[in-house]
Amino acid sequence: MLSGRFKLWSSACRRLALCCLLLPLAIAAPVAQAARVVVFGDSISAGYGINPAQGWVKLLQDKLGKQHTVINASLSGETTAGGLNRLPAVLQQHQPDVLVLELGGNDGLRGLPLSEMQANLNAMVRLAKAARARVMLVGMALPPNYGPEYGSKFQQVYREVAKQQHATLVPLLVAGFERDLSQFQNDGIHPLAAAQPRMVANVLPALQPLLRRQ
Image: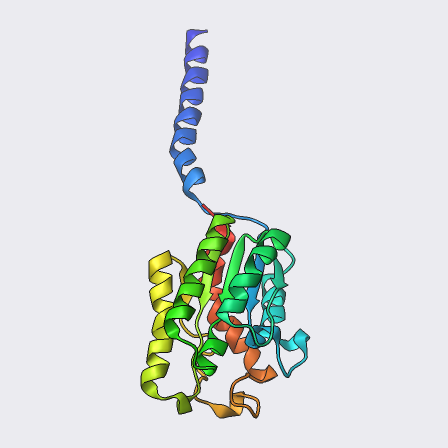
């Protein structure tokens, strides 16, 4: 009788010890969730000049599948100032888990002060965080005719904002083909439909960790 009770007690202790060992791992492991992703960008993300179904945002939704929802709140011609004015309503309407912020290109093309662009991006990241959204900042490059110095300072803005705000950064949405004009429309600014999957490939590795909750 005592031997049987001891065996039961010993087995229970082993199970309890195993649970205690596994519990911290269960708490620490990132758990996949159904995330709502809002892409907040300009014409590059709005799919200017191509069928929107071929744009990188729609391809991103296809890649992520039905578990996650991707909402395209991009607007052609948007500047960071316009985005800052528009963002509060977008955050309230869609309540994103993740905000993909792809703005600044039109500021650079129009020669607007980079200090204002940086301030606007900082403000948008803060607004998104206040709305409990995780933020991914997506950088762009200017055409070569804007000169290497201005182009370098333009891209540095994204790095500084990401560092200041502790935001995830994709340094360049068009990385890998930014100097290949055959991948762009005649304006040399907007990527062709054939280049859209490469943009998804540039974004996805940085986005996937944001789709998981710690």
